[in-house]
Image (cartoon, rainbow, N blue to C red; front, side, top):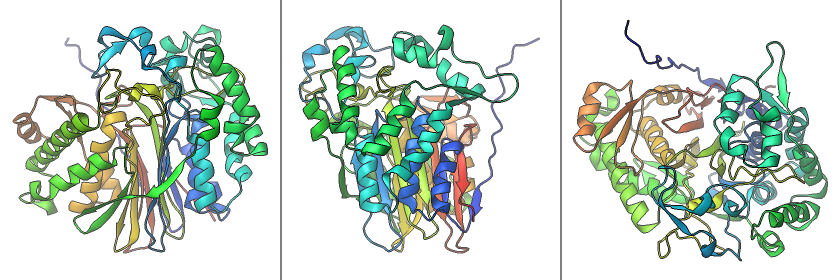
Length: 523
């Protein structure tokens, strides 16, 4: 009897529709927190901030207080979209000599040489100054309507209860267990008895999250800047310095998020508002600039042809060649980020991507605060003299690519994804499915995709027909993979959309993720 590979998932998810607001996220539990804020008359930014804090509790391997990211805000009044940039920053006293090359390649996952003891990948030396708390403060103060305590309340309640345990939560911890075991506080939280936690046979199980709830309560009481200048900052510094990290009191005190104009990309009659600068936005602009002429021979009404997929692959390959040559390399995979999209009842939209970078970031949980810290130094190229080399006080090149697409000046859909370098190709394809082929949001999320993200090959969803494989294989090597829960071969998108014909809002989460989905405001 032949041994068969496991059958791929037959994923199918229904779109969520509502005349009211919707939050789409990689965790429906976190999305529900944001939907509750919408139901209490909060706007899209209010809901995004509340959801963002909640995801840090229920998806700790993806993001949290110790991370950073980008938020795109597009108002229904037609005003220019804005971006809240709360990216991580290297410490001012960082010394590139702390990251000597060790020879070979870093676990075959990165395009640059390995560093001694993987110091840029895990542990205290891999931690950059986090921007998450400051970014949420600035977003709420500039664009929100609710108070800081109200925004934190859902996350506090979730943290006090603990991390929900089911098979997917156990899997998500087990994947990082080997490295978590190297760090005592992380192991104590996520590996009780030295093993990944197992959900109970009956009822619901929850994993205590150390001192995280206490820290969230302190921030709610003292305000966001306490993270950078108050008691929480002091606790962070004590733990960081004990571990040999170079973040100083001045690094925390001087950190500020920024509100900047969105990168405005024009594509086939729509306006794409993306994060500018050291993000995936400029590379998305490069790709979209290549696609109109590339797709002109495709039969647009029939959906993407083999020639269209080949055009995607070629555009991605060329854009990544430019990105990696001019801007520097970023981690190809795996990267653990989270994305959420929000539309409120008035049509205001937010696309928010936030990350620790790798799964469980640095793998360091700071004992006093219970905060899991980023490994943002991994974004830098450890080789000197490169566009993105490790340097003090510098912001690294990130892969995050949240967008809000407007049509006739009004927000049409908000979109983004997690998945490292694979984020931008997913965003570009879903955007094209919606704009070029007139798909519904549900159709666009179920349409198979390919990935080309600077690794010299294309990965094709194995649901794509052989004609697509032949067309792409004429350009580059091809690997076929299923859409599955794990290993994750493609980015994990979340989106909301306003249907101008009906006035209804639509929301979708990644079809292969058991936790991802959309939650509508009730009332």
